[in-house]
Length: 174
Image (cartoon, rainbow, N blue to C red; front, side, top):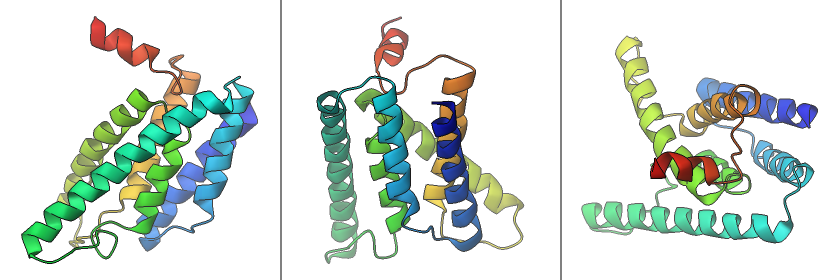
């Protein structure tokens, strides 16, 4: 299991470095990461049926979110807007879909919201310090970095299970 976690961290860091340097990520890293996530869950004793429910809810949330954003930009521009044509990269979409195969529903929502806030802060600070202003945010790369830190901390520092919502429910109900 340790080796699998190290491979996951390595792939996450490759996504980060590639997205920062090139503003694109090799597509094959996302299926590899998905398989690593599924393998880790199976080694942790999760059943496919249990994983499937979270995956379906997480993907449903993303589809709903992308539709809402598409409708917003379409109304704003008064014509149908495809958000993957300039607003959101396919790497960003694929990275989020990949996470759907590992995180439980509340953990996915928690990570999604928290990572968007952190990415915005990181990007604003980066743009403030940078000599060149770039409008393209390396969302997948920065989210991969955030997830690498988050998952690494949960695996090796705090014993939190990212495939189970219990720890978040305890925090919410305290």
